[in-house]
Image (cartoon, rainbow, N blue to C red):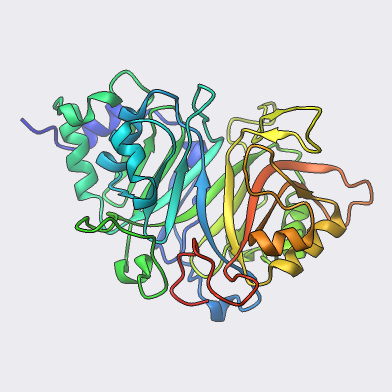
Length: 376
């Protein structure tokens, strides 16, 4: 017998601290949660509303899963969330080890193996689905003991139901997601703009896009300084309509936001988005924390701004490394990890959060092979 996702079921599974979802920013949605209650809200992220943004899109979020738990990874990202398997990592699905890529619209999750534990992102990931009925049905199947979802048993997996337009979900290791229903599925998928590759014969991802990544920060973090950093280095302005005394949202192109919010658990909460290890042979420490990847309109300009501020970074963990502007242009990418207020003469780090900054074009003007945009 099916477990109807009624108020009774919601009470039994929704044990979240509502403050943890106090700021949910999302483009083209009709409401948001503020301090646990739903308030009217509407924001359209379009080029004409923000013509100065030099970030094209935030294309992937990289977070480690628990080594040896491909079963839980598949059950959550593919069987429950309905992400599409990226063909470039299909062989790893078949052998049951190594990195997987889970696609949602033109965005991705990169999911390497941990060393050996999983990373738990200290924030909230907001995904948009056409509607939530299929997710609710699959959650009912999980409650009914469907073997497909057996790997999620005895993990941190949890689903909280606010209403038929919002689910609050915890992945098997503790990372929190908001799953929102779309009011314009065609616009949200934006297949005319771009898409990730699809295995022949497979359906596109059920999810339409990764709309917002909310990063929790300490209560003494300089939010205005964070905004100045993104404007100065990446040409990504803050969206005033989405800001508050406790948060700031940065435009990630026409359809996404990157939000920084004071940690909902209070001012004494330790916040950490990096995990450094050191080798005397390397100029920079390796970071084993999560990272975001984004495409910019002018990689040389972004690199020069980052270098002038002194925040360029090379992660020895990855093979592609750019120690100079020329190498960045050759590699079509560079990294940064220190967020610093450009107006701070002391150059104090506000937050460590690794960014892979990519170019949509190669040196000869062709589209970079991994860029999901149809035209650049």
